[in-house]
Image (cartoon, rainbow, N blue to C red; front, top):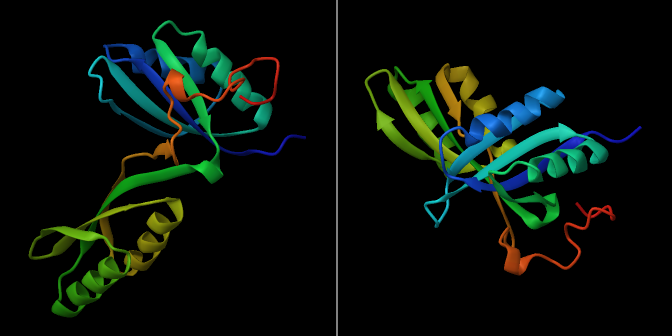
Length: 183
């Protein structure tokens, strides 16, 4: 049996209405669950970048990439190797902070995680954290005791380290050769 693991896909698509819906339908139609999804425009306003994380085996990950490439709105698909990718997400956490002592403790925790206090109210603090899964889960666990009022995560975004990009001119030779297991 193939091992289930996290696969990070970077997908360049047309920046137009309905594209995200087409991509999402591909996943739901094939029974794949999207673990994380983040979309935004690139330096070219006509192109958006979708970062998708799925928990699946190697064979299914290759199949997903091939199916994505068949969509007319898709320019490029690249699977990012975990050891060569920088992965981050933004997490906003609103925490109950009704006493002076609890405020100080929450601020200390935020400082330890290099998070920012972005809103202060009489009964709460809102923290912004940028990091990977483990950092977000660790601060959430510590803040649970104060009472998390709201929490929102943007979804993971990722780029490859070094000179390589998703653009055609930096792709490694044979990177998307369907006859090999390098997808």
